Image (cartoon, rainbow, N blue to C red):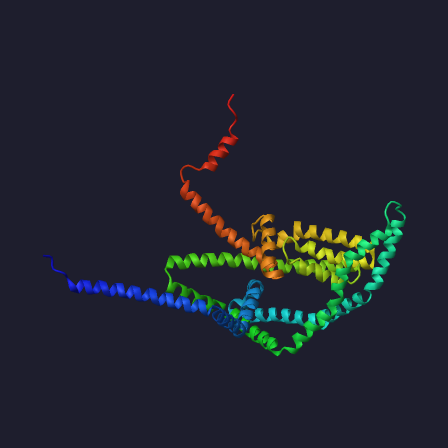
Length: 406
């Protein structure tokens, strides 16, 4: 008769009991989580909001440093190339380059609040106060034009124009109050000012000591992962950074130049409210592909309400400006930083706008460019592994190029 090993049997029962206890505990925990899921969601939401509120100066400081870094490097290269003493005082040169950036940025902010915002508000208020006059003038001009064309009723055309312009005119009438509310909130909320000041100081130290921050980050990643994984991560991070930085900085510079050219052109054309029109064109130009068309529509409508003849010249000028930007200025500044076709740009703008609004329309393009880069590399790698010796696409290409047999 076979002897039973009670010692092994007890271990088996103990293991089974532990498994049963773990399963029962997991079921009870899952039921408790499901029962308190709304409260858990509120807790998670509160934690995220608190984290964002406390960390907002650091996030904003990082954003400022990220945008300023290319300009700081530009000034550093300039000083190191033309000033021999800068080579021996690199820290002083770094501080001086950062301060130059801050002077330009703070000067720009002061110019916006001291000159641009009051001028913009005055132009908007003036335009809105005369909307009824402009509408009557447009109806009169339309009537005079179509009265000469006997087979088109001028009254019907005016009714169509009034219906189309009614929502636009209503939206413009709310703009002055909206600008006033925004400015009041900006001036009244002290925390925003404190966060911005803290963010400026944080961004200064991030830029000044960016090599040390980078080395600490490298050491942490090397410590918690293998060397091969760390190097692969850093290589991909550099490529992602190159895509985003080239696109964001390049698009900002491109839109600034387009806005300045638009202001000069509208002023020469005696277009109404050239500051408003150029600001619309410059800001919307930040949105890839659709931006120029979005900016052209309100600019043409505003010109049409004030002077229909000028609106034609404004439309032609915007068309010429778009061609200059699309065929010369944009490629010169942005280069091949994205390397994606127009259909992918349209998809990125549509999806980004649906998910995150205007900001999503802007950052959707570099995000999709990054995804496309990794996806293309993955597909190419899998394809080469699968068809290393017998490439079907190469065979198809050879068959298409070979002449048919006689």
